[in-house]
Length: 68
Image (spheres, helix red, strand yellow):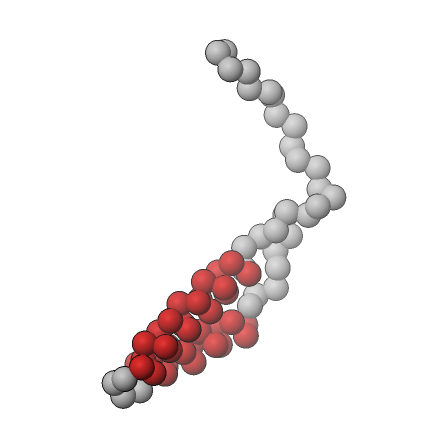
C-alpha cells in the first residue's frame, strides 16, 4: 500500500467554498458554494486514501470452501 501525497489544493478549494457559502448573501451563491464544498471535500477524501501497488502480491490465505 502506498500513501499518496496530501491533497493540499483540494483542501484549500474546500475551505474557499465553505467561506463563500458562509459569508455570501442569499440567493444561488451559498447553495452553489455549499455543493462545491461537498464535491471538493469528497474528492480530497478519495485522493488521500492509500492505494495498493499493482506489483504488490496479495497475502496468501486459506481458500474458503462452501459448506465447511
